Length: 182
Image 1 (cartoon, one colour):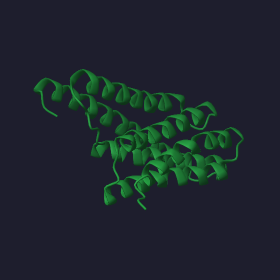
Image 2 (cartoon, helix red, strand yellow):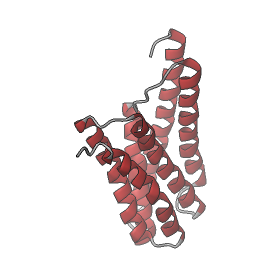
Image 3 (cartoon, helix red, strand yellow):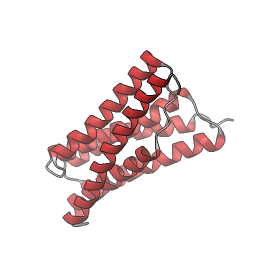
Image 4 (tube, one colour):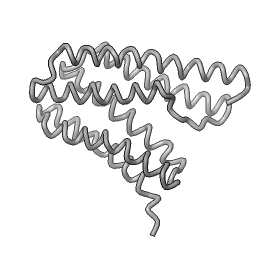
């Protein structure tokens, strides 16, 4: 029996965890929210590992995995900003970058040429920092740790990598479209 469906199922589970996480945020149940958020974050690495290690990569998985990440990050940033745990301007910048990347990738794919999106190194660093920042914010909201300075430093790193990775994607698409190569 093949388990090639497993990475996609893990991605779908990550997407399904978003609503319960958000509900827990709103109810100030940050301990449970943190636990589910960590499960969702770890599932991101697990589905990719399984897909690449065992050759279980699919076009559906190529969509579900980044969609799950972006939805989890965007809704978490938005909800935590609404609740006052994250500056609204930072949430807007993080969400705007993801909107630009999603819209840009669709436009490139349909107007220029097929795009088999592989995240860039800076984008992977950005995603790791976003998850770290969100874990710190959730932990702080529930338990008062880490301190605000630590959260601010990690938030600044998120801001820097959001700007650099957004610029990197857009400039690579423009350069590739102008040169006629992938």
